[in-house]
Length: 75
Image (cartoon, rainbow, N blue to C red; front, side, top):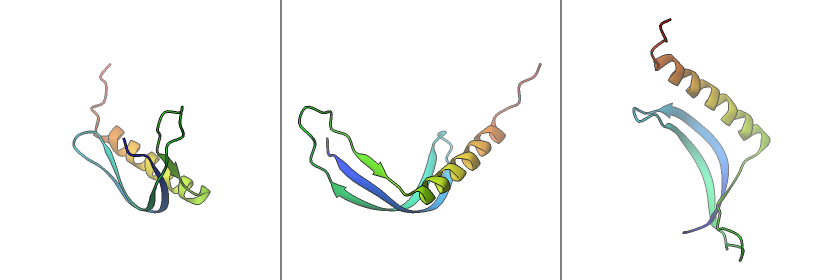
């Protein structure tokens, strides 16, 4: 398994696909990371507070789209 540091520079767009996945177009800086011995290899995603707020807004919008596509329960 390859391990990386992934720094999100900018979110460009978000969408949903027919497989129930959210897709994000982003500008990122990716650098290889040396795994620490004795710890499970893990990639790290880093983003600024501003980008975290953008991500939160995009997630809320995309989740609302998922909810809008679901059939309403009938009672």
